[in-house]
Image: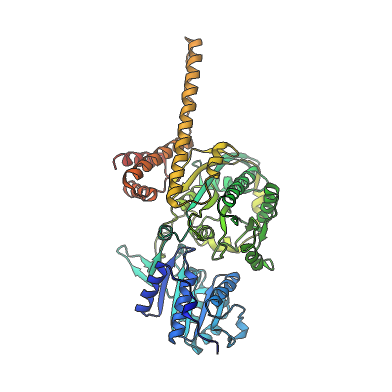
Length: 582
């Protein structure tokens, strides 16, 4: 019989872990759900609970259910470090684990294929079941029914999640739901530790989002040539086509963004994170391989390509995690749970836009190792993504029975993003990329938007790419405010110089009618209003000490509407007027 784990083998618990563990041990019940942001330490928390129960004799065995094959190995390795032996190679045909193990790690798919095997294992020994990223139990009726049938007789169950819950109506097994005053049922967590909490405690890194817009041109199947600018107000269909055009590896947009991302990575490596690494998240295998070639062309160094159906993908991830290589390109293997702490620069080059997928992807970059480390994520200036970037700290429960809006963010699309990696030939036939160029549109941090726009490769862009690699959250906000103030001052000086030159020219041609001012586009108007709003928020921050994100959230509460990155001109004007009265 394998020896019981030693509690002395565990590292000191973080504050939220201690609080949650005390709450768990004081209120013993069959089910407990812990929600904690990626990088907060859910694995350590769960294994400590498992050790406590094994040592106390409450349970005899542990079963961990993970989303992917790679995570099975990761869980087993983490457990072994604290004296809990889990069989990551367990197969349904094995029926039982060897006596060398405290239990096994399996996937949701494994459970769904043979629930009777796992039910028998659970009933044979008093079992503690850890359901990692529990929302996967709602992915399909087969998986959900399999999880329920397999583990309903478990002695204890611990549900973990670090990402927003699903937006479908499939109840998740073992999750408790409470009906609110509006008649809707919402999931109830026993412990919640959000991104904002973790950022305050220094457990996760601040994330700086660099949103790139640019001109895109493409040809439709009917032969029509269309052009659009990323970030400009347009129909959902045009947004999707412009977005797809920007991500095309044959255009200049990806080259310019990858060059900027690598410049940011080099700054981090030179400024205190010598092993900093970058990750490009691609839509499909074809684009992933093309992006890897672009990275080699831009940096002179080959990138590691990870495709989920390739043999050895997990080994390549593990090797990259401990190597000094700069770039990895992946499709879906690193969208959830994979632990590569040195990742600090990301390029979101995928068309997936569900809150669930986005949160999982950004979660790969937030794990803090020491004070001052920051994460930088480059993404297209697309309204959906800008809104998600502005609301990173938002908590989201699983709601049953709520009317669903066709907003393009339905989490049922996550499965398609996770299951389909081949580029659609039909789609390519209907869409031919003609050109795409990139320019820095805005920088999003703590829910606020900074910057006045900058062409790729200009000194203005370099000002943002050159932010020091080691900064606290407060220092990030201070520097971004200063960068924006410097840009506005430079623009003002240029405007004054232009006006003076025009005045001198006008004196020479007195009597001629002055040319009317050029019309201002809606996009330009929104940029000006965002700058004005951010300046007012910054001033209010200096007067009151309130975080920028909290001030923006209060303005949204008063005025309504989406984050400022998605707000209309009218909504921005209303918030500016409101902020002036605060």
